Length: 523
Image 1 (cartoon, one colour):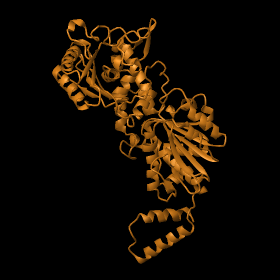
Image 2 (cartoon, rainbow, N blue to C red):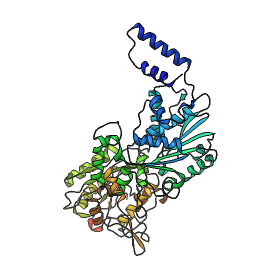
Image 3 (cartoon, rainbow, N blue to C red):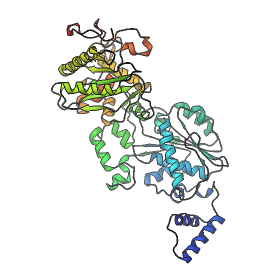
Image 4 (tube, rainbow, N blue to C red):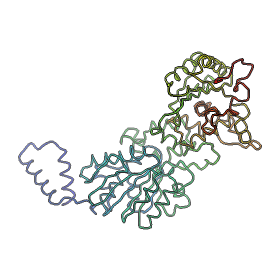
């Protein structure tokens, strides 16, 4: 058959039923011709016409930068695509998987990304929708989960695994093999080593990612290995929606979003360069928390269970800081929940909000909720004292820990200068140990801003006045998250329940200044 017959039949199947005898006869003839000469998959028709496959089979009209990527995968064994947000990465990846599956004998496609959510709920969902909406039927058994795959009777398949399953990735081989790696900047080198072994047999690889990391295979594809890769950079500023100033393709970056990020992050910031322009930020070396680490923590948020003792970090806006926020940061286990910022609340209102939050999270099965509050300054100190009074009236329902960031370091005084430095080192540890944070543009910028400064033999965080100047505000959200992750020493699993020097352990009553006249909690 010819392609035009198949396309015509597919289109007419979606049209209203013919209303005349002649139209019915014509449609029947077309259907008979199509059935007589139907495409048998896999078909070589589209091997060198992947863009036509997108249009004629999948019913997708790719935009110009998509076309560039699709043709690059046809023409090159190794392709790396660095991009900003919302430029059709996942859509392109799913379409390429189906093109390869449908066009080559014994085709095997392996899709992978950093998290199971990215594989199953984004890549695999996109692929399943494309199959369901295709203009021509693509035969095969479709499974709900990527690891079970989309499989044809002749052993062609598309499967998906997370990037932590190196053995599964390495265990797939074949004469026509395509690896599609999404969020490739965060994929471990062991995966690339496994793929490299299969590339000896001619396997192809295409990588998509926001360029969040300045090391690893994805970064080197644009640097030391540029001669071996076809590299493409796509800015979110290039989408048809941005160029037209209206929605041309649903889901792509819009002009309004671009403008919002220019104002929120600053056009010269690393966040804007990485997440909008798709450019690697090469000044990451001195940062305490890299964009890569922030991005990973955001990606795993949806699949991280919020289980474990409840902590509430409170960073209180100080006197004269009318533009600053008081931020509540709730956390259970490895999951920080969406932050709750407030402006202009009285001390009593702040206390009421804090007690309301912990009351909703209290459980008979859990230890009492713990509030960790910055007690620097008059307002923070007063709110702390009022919360302490509530905790003392019923120690089984609430614990309150006061932290003074300006105090000398107590946990690792040989490494850090002040408690503030230890707070940042601790939240870095939390994120490295699979901690998860919600997507929050202000939080992202605040977490990414500080750097380590050598202070004699110890480390210090960028001074707060400098951060305020760079950010245009106080890093209230990041400070609240730091507090939420600051567990008393007795709570830490590596401590065995023993008391030790903690943020409040400088005084025999557990860190409360003896002059405050309050007894320590938990005694």
